[in-house]
Image (cartoon, rainbow, N blue to C red; front, side, top):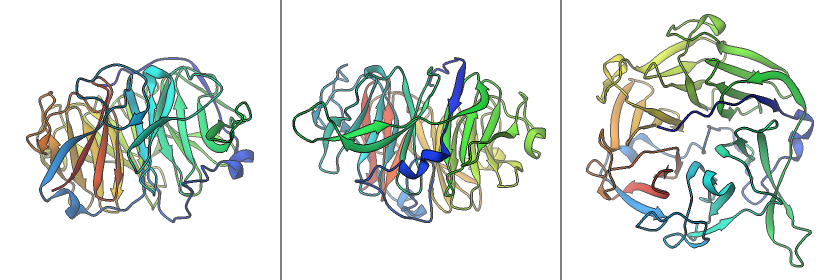
Amino acid sequence: MKTLKSSLIVILFAALLMSLFSCKKDAVNINKSSKLQLATTTLSSFTGPLVVSLYAGVENHEYGNLDGPRLLAKFASPNGIISTPTGTLYITDTGNGSIRKISPEGIVSTILFKKRFVNPHSLTMASDGTIYFLEIGKERPIRSLHYGRNESLSEPVEVCHIVDGIKIPFVFTNLFDFAVARDRTMYLVDAGTHTIIKRTTDGVGTVFAGGTAGYKDDNGTDAQFNTPTNIAVDADDNLYVTDILNFRIRKITPDGTVTTIAGSTKGFTDGVGSSAQFTSLEDVIVANSNTLLVADGYAVRAIDLTTHQVTTIAGGAAPGYVNGPALSARFSGISQIAVHNNDIYVSEEGVRYIRKISPL
């Protein structure tokens, strides 16, 4: 389970500068967005035979900071992960204080900045292809990647610049994750205050749901969460939240109505709705219009949004490192997940791997 890092954070966000935020190489115009990737998968992709393999990192999970071919590259603690429409992966390498990139050709590189980041954490992508990331412990933690030119080098190279925004009247105790809707409204999760914050493009922030520790399905601030951590948004602006100490996946509709999708008490059981059990909900993404994928400790599990059926598709209740058939494979502890086409990518912070789950 990822350690929750408590710090006093003032969030800044500039709607004024949003039109400048574009990661131009991978930018696209689409009508759907989710927290981490675009809706390109189908449920059937996750119900047939799947196989788990090592995608990036060295087999002995050696600590390091080495770019190059993906199976020779070294990471310190890969955490947040997203896939662009072209299949490029972006990863926050928290231990190295950097943003790493894996090209579709399998080459790992480090995005060049003028400084090392303190604690880069979650990544998210907006519908126009803009990539944002959260730097925990900073006064201005929300950043965007913007491609430009590194003037300090004699040769032009592909680099990203950071654009910060305008101060807004919120003090967070443990900002953990965020998502950007199609209209660029930003939703932020403060695990410390059990709150979901809504930030409009004009920079106005309001409490959207929660605010009191507990468990209650209701509307807006009458609803209760117990340490919400990760969040995703679908094409209809519904939010999905990992309510980690309630061991549940919660849904928030655009009008602020909170309901429970799946989960009950702590455990590891597939089933429908409240008959399913989760052990350590680490991440959630919208894989397609009918499917959520969640990282649950040592497993990736799929939730059918029509039936609320929870199905384990890779890994299991026990930790380990085993590649091969997905349900026999073992993970050491999944941080975050991303999807491109029919492939799922997971970051494993503790063993410094990126693993891949794909159809046979």
